[in-house]
Image 1 (tube, helix red, strand yellow):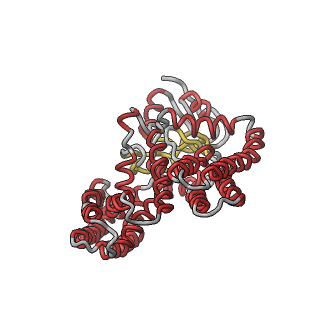
Image 2 (spheres, rainbow, N blue to C red):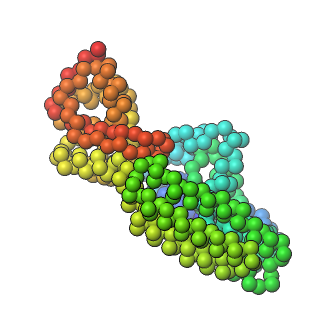
Image 3 (cartoon, rainbow, N blue to C red):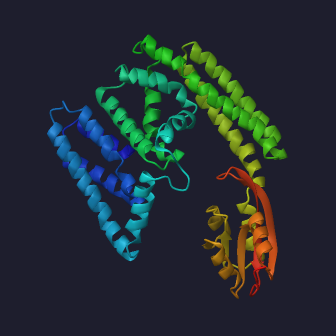
Length: 409
């Protein structure tokens, strides 16, 4: 998106050349290779830029230029996708495009989304929280940009075209995840940089400065929430090694917030930005050094994987049931079979070769209540926190030695 928009904006400010279309086409083609139709996100952004720039003398040429870029991009994608689809017996388009793009846009998948109208403003808090701490400057930046007091006409067209259509499209898609909106992050950063750079000049209006001061309305609630997490999470998750680092991290962010509030209300916006940059760097270094390592103690997959690697040879197959954790493939270093239902689990138990089963302890306890199981040796057990489900969980690793005899009780 960034590459296509930057090249296109440059083309708008000069005479369109065929190599501009080739460059954008290559960007679109490789984008579609990576993310399927999602790689076409620059297209509505480019279309918006064309509409906003319709009074340009090269308007017709720019349209032809954009269409040519789209055709080139699609040809590049199809040159790779058609053989890939044939090699996958048609599953490439069916799964990669049909399920993971089109289906995600039309219905909520994996519980990421729900009622259309209830989830329509989903990305507003995501932008406010995810763009912390620079959310401080976005209200003033939007005020100054819409008032044509920062940037050139072409740069404003670039930023508006980059942000608005992508935000609308992702908001209309039914399946929603926070990272789906990161396409607009570079444009938001440019908006913030524009207004910070202009804050010492006389180009900003009183309204712009008022909205810059009001940026603390968005900054302080997020900062307070993060401070609360630093203070409460160690006790809630029962991680003693995190108690002191959590307090220190909360103190750093508290001091940073007080200083930012002071300079922001004093109209010293550039000083506020410098403090925010320095403070966030210090906070991130400390969190990476002391806070994140402390969470390793409640991570389930590294410990279980270590036990599997040390207690079984690399040729022993590994399976999971009711514990879909993708990182296990990385930590274990083997392909892991995902058992879909209890019937398939019984088939797995009936196999005669050695094997490893990863399963939540409560699920396995239920299996034991319904069946007599033999020859299963527990080689690891770990309690931790399932972030995706938002609850505590205990997982066991069981070793199958030979055949497992089972009868329904």
